[in-house]
Length: 507
Image (cartoon, rainbow, N blue to C red; front, side, top):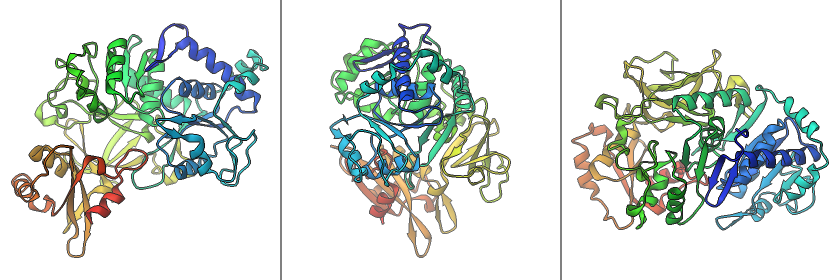
């Protein structure tokens, strides 16, 4: 990609990075890492928001065979300590502040037995592998000036497709994050397959809102753009109008990410006057032009991505509206991966239309989890059990039902929370979260927390319950209700729903 040095790789608000700049800056920093003794296998943590600093630091580590450990900027001090310790981070690149949060203070709270501002090396029982915290990379770059380019090239030549590239931590809603290991060859080949599937070409300009420290941002958008030689656009602006200014200026051709996270852009008073006609495809529906926006997103193929699969594992190359029979489809397994739906108790493959657990297999899956043996993660014949419940139709298209652990079992009957949530949305136009609450008679009862947007009057739950009985079997209709303001819904630092806290509220 650096053979086109003036081509923009990243545009993040006013922060721009060309492929040529990325090549030069990451080489300088890579020499700095070599100067302090880092090299193949060194674990390099990145506590940075989206931007060129994240990109250059990640690339510098990757090109010398070090292992990148992205860390969520949402992490609490306790979570920071857990990830730094469990991932054995040796060198930590960190931002000083972001969106009003002081990360030096957060790290000091995470590791009270060290002075985070002290000169290296660091020795602490709380994080025994950590040796250096880098807020300002300039001294490191200066130290690298003593390293000859020939030495850097020799180290780079030792990096192989079999080497570990990154450890991405899952953002689970019930357990501590698990470190997911991906290697150079499998991850980059997988991203090239996805590039071809989605026809992601060199001239594309992709606007995405996924954080680089999670798999969607790190792999599908950041490295995926690199593999394509294209341009990635993102924004850290708190002001919707500033992000809209950016989009009008850079003229993205594609979008990807979380549609709910751009809804505020469409609600900005200036939005109706904006020219976003350059966007021709993607899934950020609220900001898509009318002529390409899906009138019913459920009739466009969804994509299923997961950290363990290196981003997308179920998708389709067909971006058109689907027939009604494919409503909610997630497409098929992407090239290089096998997928099947099995009875989780017996391992037998389910017939078409029967709900079971999604299993994945193939060379592009993760190597495994940090600290776990292979047999703890994969079946003897190499299948990864995802914990996601799906059914597959007779044409081979997959449909999501829920999480295995989320399925509600009431009086012996299984209830899919997703089905009930879809019915509530259809009847009341309100987003909800459906959970099972322990019950001494029925085992569990179905309970629903309905999210109330600001300014919206609360629904009559008795009327809502009565209407749902006309659309759902009686045992699926929630017996317990909670109406909760949007901004009061409990979430974890990852931004995901805090299921435990919500279950406590419902109970």
